[in-house]
Length: 332
Figure 1 (cartoon, rainbow, N blue to C red):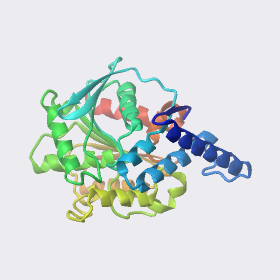
Figure 2: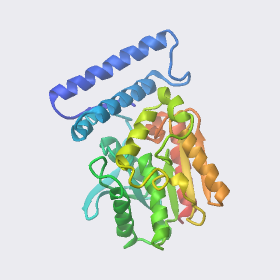
Figure 3: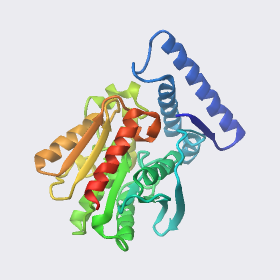
């Protein structure tokens, strides 16, 4: 990440900037004695991961999650990439259209942002703009309700409303449902809702580092804590906020518990150094065994939602190029 953007009060900006510099100094000191998070990562990558992880921790542990969200957004680390898109806001359902100035695809993307169902910061808005620009397709980014204020089934209801809104004007065979992290969970769960209600399926469902099990699954959930911007405990906390009284249960709210055979093609991407790696791989293997049409690509050197690194990382460039290829194959 090569740009730093600030928001909020001077006091909050100063505190966040001070922490960013403290993390940078500590990172350079550790690297001087060959204590790197990963041997192939540069200092900027490591600093970014450490800082975002810190921001998530502070935000999630705040007594007021609304204030926690504001603190998380005080400092944003961005690439220098410029996304040429036209932005239009929508009130019913709530969301934002990102329309590329250079349209290259006939697909329309219904995008569900990540953030554990709890955060919807500037990073998610930039991610949507990146998808529209890189793929050359229109993107509708749904502004769904957040936890813990709005637990399940609020997100499932909002996902269905967004689908019906898109489907009103666009044929299903031209729609790609896509999400990163919790948005990937939302995309996969939407397919089950469509089956339940006997509605049309999209041309393609994409999960970018998707959350496929709201419980404790896989060794990577904690073993990859050091190399990821999300921690295992965070994933479990997000699950508790999604279903605070265990009214629905882990099985009902985890995509890995369902059969996706016959629901159309699913494409997944994962990073080898992210905490969700094992559950994503488990999901793909299980669904292939079920007879579902699933394809997965894994970049061993990458953390969670690495696609956001865009042109600054070779693996991110490859992942976005591969995503464009898959969409072009499924939507003519």
